[in-house]
Image 1 (cartoon, rainbow, N blue to C red):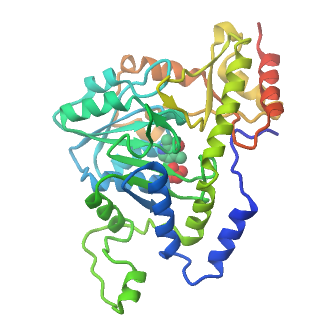
Image 2: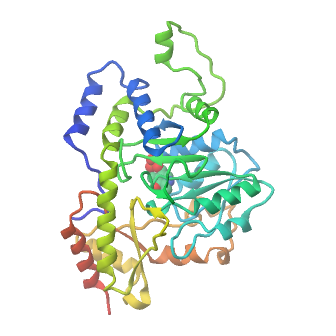
Image 3: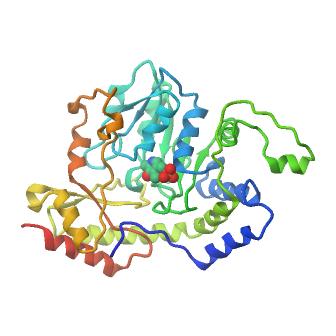
Length: 378
Ligand SMILES: *Cc1c(COP(=O)(O)O)cnc(C)c1O
């Protein structure tokens, strides 16, 4: 079986976790600060604030921007539901804008059509690990007074025009789920370039309390004050130790992912019915996913047939994503005009994620391509 994605865990990772288990602090200890410092240094962001998941980080992003009832936030529909759910958690309204047909990244022209007097923010999703058109998105956000949030759960380690993920938007959300570029089991973070927003995010992840128990212990004090309503969204020291260890190997993993993507690109030229998603020239791509379209006319089979036949061969392809507004929870209250989403709806029936992960061998890539060649009806 070739999985579509897989984490890479080394003996160093295991040792780092075991060391924390033997230490005094299992959570809210020194490894949290250390992971936040190395994440900020790696990305060039001023501040990193860790969370128990990428979903919690996105929720915190909406909280620190004071999103609430009546506020609209523009989001790509071709993403994991958490990208839009965070707006709902704050009582705001996610407003979907179509993606570009070639890159499947949110389309700046579609965004402009969706901006109203109530629009407060834009959540740009770096689909498959490719940064969005941030230069254009920043211009639009500046013009209309919106805050730009990057859902960079796929793209840690990527860049646009030499600017790393973490400095491309005001607020950047990361995930450390095992299929993502680095893992802490579950986990996430916000990268920020504003100390006040970072403080607000830290308070939100700790019930709305401005001090943590380690600071209090060190200051010899017991009292604490809950200033706002927050959650327990903390990441443990056990997980942060794993994250620190993983982050050291991310540059090498990005290089390997790029080699795998290039090999797919070259081999798939021989299969006209299988079309890789376009890569922007200005970016260093994190290649979290390797997505192709199965063009039913030229391939002679549909995406769903390709999915089933490849799985039978032990090649675990996947689909990223069912458009958010197609989930039944979103069926009521989101009266959408299909003609607003031609690119999302066409892609939704054609996209297929082929296996990609750092430990994947060239032979594995060849086996996936041979499997595709086998099932095409041309
Ligand atoms: C994984 C993911 C999330 C959620 O992250 P979790 O850590 O699983 O909560 C949000 N957005 C996108 C685009 C993701 O891929």
